[in-house]
Image (cartoon, rainbow, N blue to C red):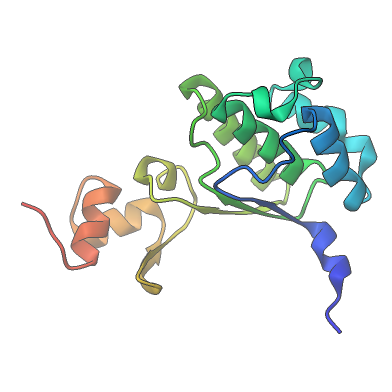
Length: 169
């Protein structure tokens, strides 16, 4: 029998917000907090994603970026040791996007392992280590600068194309 207790140490944010649209922001985050035994983390999670002032808003009335932020709060509310993020800043305004990456770096520095899935190469460039995957196959891994150097390119998008055998000239 698998140890389901390990799930309390994992946070997961899907690309499409997996929220209950008829509930408020606060109710969604409280639900995910309750199933992870972390009711005391709701306010901190909402403040981190800058939604505390909108906690009473019904999710279906929010913009896509705000739904993304609410989904992130649900993934973070229990302060997981492992955080899996799929396209975490899609639809988020540029200023808040920068702030989220600063928050992610701070969480990583304090011991949270964060795995980000993204096809956006400037997001990938913000990560400490990358695994470039094409058609389910790992084509290279390393730091962003190591990957650019191996490919002989200036940016990660060109590096990916070169390493995938699709160099553009």
